[in-house]
Length: 124
Image (cartoon, rainbow, N blue to C red; front, side, top):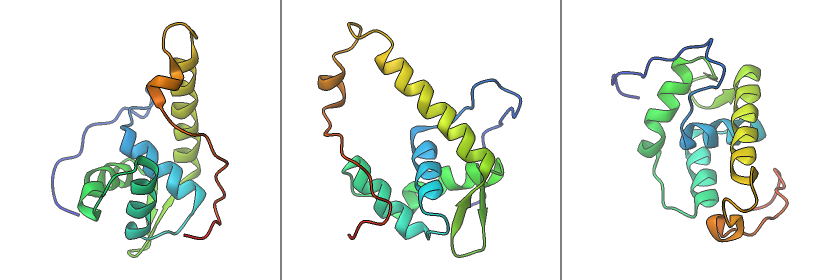
């Protein structure tokens, strides 16, 4: 990863500052600890139905390592327990935001997704 700057982060903030890609990375690594960056890219690309390359996640990975939300052995990454808890908190907040008033958003049209059960050990 490059030597670009890392956004300042206040560990005492009541709501974690996390981007959508950072949240996706932490969720992916919490589900599949020890996955290599290429695996993270493939999984997140599948979730977003987008073509991604490893450089697309260089910034989020650098920020998450800087925050000590991820650990690395040089080949793969793992989400820390603190990262998993903060990601869960952020994801729960997003769900509450979207569903807070069923008349505020037409959630089905907004998301336009099919909800399926995720099996962390499914074949690709």
